[in-house]
Length: 269
Ligand code: G
Ligand code: MN
View 1 (tube, protein in one colour):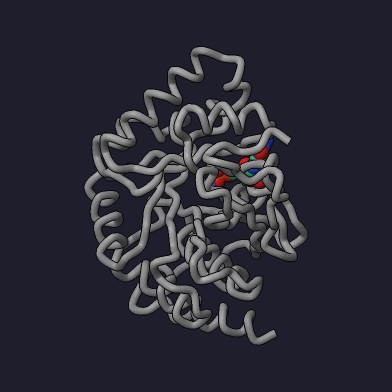
View 2: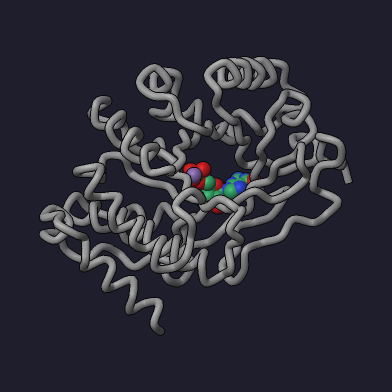
């Protein structure tokens, strides 16, 4: 398939980066895509690319096979794959493509982004459609580098998000170092939010502080109508989770129309 050939060419063309070129082959990956809904506008505004093994193995299995000798190329491979597959599945120009990245796998921001942008150009995905999600699995070892990455990405019209906000290493302290475009609420805050005053307080406070800083909020892992409605009432404008659609491989999943918002609130159907 020409797509695979192009991925290999792009990966080998990790322009000027000796770090990537020196690494061994990372594990093979494929991507599943899960839609992100804007509940006020009642429409899908983007898709998150979620890494899986070639036979659909879960993300944890794939990530577990990444070593310190392959992490830079692994990160590059995931970005290129996500862009290639999203293009093949017909991502519309006005929808975002959200890609997870390992901040500690960025060696030199300007060089590391070049392969990603080359892939976007090759596959016809507008650079401004790309969102980079900073995952919480690793502590960012160098806050100065993180700021440099975000500034480099922003100067190229790309968006950044803090993933799993509230869990692991992705807490308030990250916002002290840089302001992303998007904060994604960890699903632990979302689970049962409709019945839980404490979670409601945490979500409302996060929305308020994000409003103040000009950051959009997306709730992750929304599984029920009650969670969807409670989040909408708390001002969480973006939502993602099994309630809307499960991650899919063969197509960009659609969201049943009765689950899209009506008048700023998702329908309870
Ligand atoms: O860490 P990150 O948020 O990028 O990963 C999200 C993970 O959660 C993915 O592996 C995805 O398949 C899974 N996921 C997506 N939606 C839901 C959901 O509604 N409930 C649960 N339990 N998991 C979800
Ligand atoms: Mn993510």
